[in-house]
Length: 285
Image 1 (cartoon, rainbow, N blue to C red):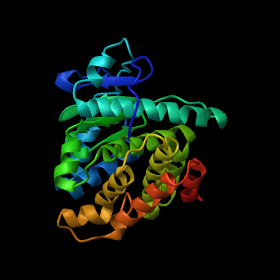
Image 2 (image 1 turned 180 degrees about the vertical axis):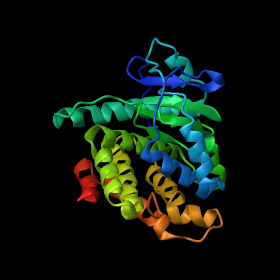
Image 3 (image 1 turned 90 degrees about the vertical axis):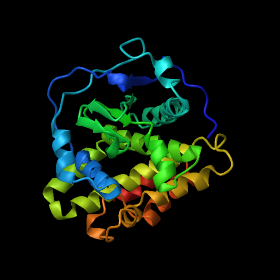
């Protein structure tokens, strides 16, 4: 997508690369951490129990690095092409979703984008490259090791600029769910009915895919040729069934946490074909 240059004063960025870790106190492991661990197990063959153990070694919620604070936003965003693209995407996402929340009379707080390399810290625990990008509701942070994009290209065959934009737009979708209370509702339902925990997780993830598509639809003048195909290809590559096959594992629907390739493409496409986020609410009915 053709995105305008970000405004350093209008986005929240924290940079943990080069050992620049934030300082904090205690924290808790969220339900999203289990999803992250399962992704690591499926894609990288990591033992979920080991990854969750690492996540529980919480260093505390990260300090909020706002423009003018501990992070030089301009410098961090221009570290490399991937960082710049993510900052531009974050700026566009903020500009797109803030008026939606205002129209619905729902308080809006933009998330922060946190760059780290290999290892980092979040309000949900340790951040590791093997987790892939993730959202932490405790500190409203979208955590990203930009090396992940090379893995997308090399290991998953998910190429193209919009495939990368889709990644951050999906995580931004989880921020929307956190602000609207949907995440808490799903967490409560999972606690009440553990047998349906994975199925409920799938609904949450598909809604985030749909929100990513809505963002693209609300910026119809921005997409470039091939963007839709790039996004759908990325959604196809990271479906639970595709990841299981890629990891040499038997496809087990009962272990799905994000949805099949077909489901992820379907809901991303629904969002991209509509500029109304209400279409995404169908998943929660």
